[in-house]
Image (tube, rainbow, N blue to C red; front, side):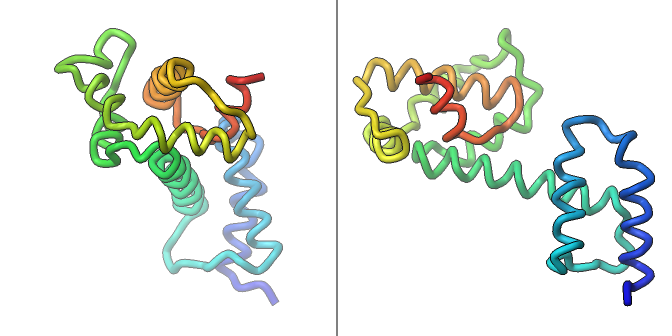
Length: 154
């Protein structure tokens, strides 16, 4: 038997799915999968949008953690910069982008690339990748770092 809270959540999900922005639909699908697998923990008083926000923030945190783990970048500075409304014009105000970029452990990141792609990359290419990766991560939206690197080299 389905609880009334779960049934309400499913009704909201089905009713609003087509109206969701495309970028939020994968999170709605994750919620539905978790409901179907019995993995979703129902929280008292939560609406569908609360779960949607939680799933989105959780994935964003995972992407941020992957970047931190792969580069050993200064996490506090990265998160601070992600909270700002950065543009190509102001990304390096107060030399903050340079400071963030210099906090990357290039040797560690090179090892990450070699391990995950099976490619040895010369340091200058690693530095170019770091610049592009961080700019995209800060200016566009957080994303899967490994996928970005694979696409960069293909």
